[in-house]
Image 1 (cartoon, rainbow over the protein chains, first blue to last red):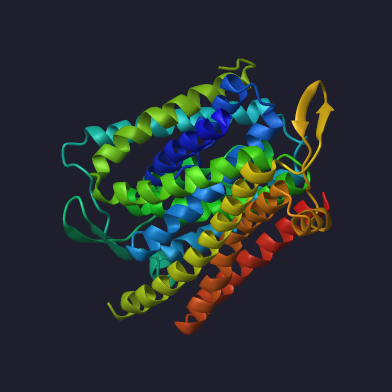
Image 2: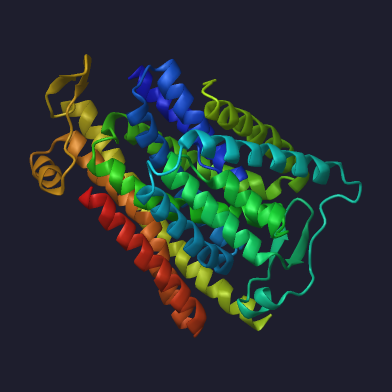
Length: 280
Length: 127
């Protein structure tokens, strides 16, 4: 009963944070389950994949209703991510995971540096509205209503091939290393493709559930998903993600970025160290 | 903004269908939790690698047999599986939505996503 309550509360927290930032709750859930509850890593991964799907499905309902996400960008980039994830799953054992951890770890550190620079920029959050032949061909530009700034924001994007490759790499990482790829997705859209942060986060939320569904079937049928853990967690996360998706819309993009930076910084350090054989 | 208005209508439909899917899975999980408090897990505890935990069904045949017997863990597993299907539902409904919008390019793109996803899930089922 106590652990059920703990899982429920943790699920709410992971859902709120995940929905705001466009990341899965794995980085909160895995350490709590393994360190605090002493659970085998296999079940912790099974639980975090359920949390990713619940965050995605819970928040997407609100983001669709409020026109925050970009469905075309999501489906266009989803091809890259799912292909990457399958290739990753097939290539497990071919590459040294340590090398990949170091590579992706340093990439996250570099991305946090980029995000800090963006935060320091005196001109604030700029919206890219230029034209790009690929964006026009695939009708990727869109608009959203920013409740914090109380205005409609029309946006475009650029560097689509770069974002596509990044999404593929994000999928590859999730397939090979069993890590969530939400943070990489947000970085691909926000930093590489110059999409505004809020639609980037909302779109990442939609995408990460689709990417996770495939690996979730693996974990479901091999017995990594335990009903006693998944049930309270899923309910908690669904509630949390519903709240988070509403909170995010009234938050200033700058504040969201301020929460995002320490998280990818932490993830980057953790992954790089893991690559060198240090677990924190 | 013609295109965006069209997209809006479509997104609202997807949102509604997705909500039905998510609420259904949540209700099934909640029924499972309710059954657990009334009747317990419904399965025996097993010891594996020195850890004691209650066994649970993983295959559809076992899950449905368990549900027929009113076992809470079987009901929860069905709810969890329905939750795993919600992203698939999202892709399927998106295809229909783009079709309604007469956006052939995105019908193709989203269908490719669905095919890749089904392939990956099938791989997952077989493994």
